[in-house]
Amino acid sequence: MTVRVGIVGTSWWADSMYLPALAAHLDASVVGLCGRTSEKVQKLAEAWDVDWWSIDTNEFLDPDRLDAVVIATSNESHEELTLLAMSRGLHVLCEKPIATSVEAAHGMADAAARANAITLVPFTYRYMPTNQYVKRLIDEGYVGRPYHLNLRYFTGFARDGEYNWRFDTELAGSGVLGDLGSHWLHLARWLLGEITEIGCISERFVDRQSRPDGSNYERSEDSAVMTVRFESGAYGTLQVSAVCWEGTDFGQTHHLDLHGSDGTIYALNDWSSVQEVRGLKAGQRGPSAVLPIPDEIWGGARNDTVHNTYRDTFRVNHLMIGEWIDAIRDGVAITPDLTEGARVQHLLGLAQRSAATDGRLVDARV
Image (cartoon, rainbow, N blue to C red):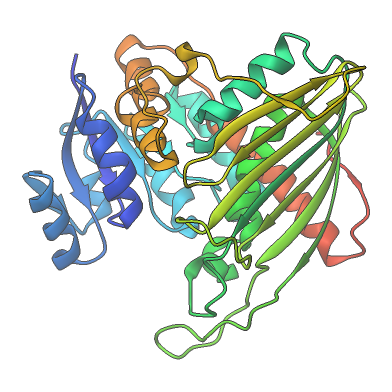
């Protein structure tokens, strides 16, 4: 079975993530592209040799021509497009955060269950070799009982102060919390289990320009720190900032520290050439030692630069997007799905509420 896929959205992300990964999968065929402007969508369609393109989403979400659709648009459009696609029997990959409100996210997850749609929310960093190995080490008991987890995501794309819809509350729902914090909330839950309490402080450090049409809007946060407590009793700090100067090739770095009863794990991804996991067992002296990432985790991915690893993880190893295609082909469920996306949205909503008051922990249990 060849899965016929349409993509809604013509950003650099569609061009660099979804189109290459789908083109590399033997059981996937990108049969159509949809965007807001004819010029842009036609140009992308020609670049990828896609015959059918449209600027009308109602016409585009056609079950006679598509089996599945990738929703890679701005956040405020996710709910409408996802619900329409599933009502027509299409399987859906929806970008994160999946909505601009908790209520919308839960509605999307409920609709997916009713439609038996195979859905995926692309929390990409879960699939990177460093995080895959950290997960394995935790599951194998390297740290014993986890005590506390520290995740830091530092990047600088918001430093220039230019308009960016990701910081336009009407379009995005939140700022760096939804854009980057959603990744960390999912990763934290995947590594250590359910989050039962959450608190947050956030800030807008950089003044942002008006919209291109000159209109004003509510500016969202560009830096935030979340504090979480896990069901196990462990706690974590999840920091995300888009106003950091890191000086790396890609301008971002990821850091992980995890301490537990039996040991400590450190992980660093500098988005240049360093993808490293280090560890130290309880009672050992001296600096932490490099824990080589096993070959089976690398798979066919290159490990010379982080970006080559990133490309190969999705295009050669067929993780995430490829797994979604496999699931559609085989008629089985996959995770992280819209239910997971809704859970993350619930936590984001609580984090925003906490940040708007005094930053205290609030109950995150449903």
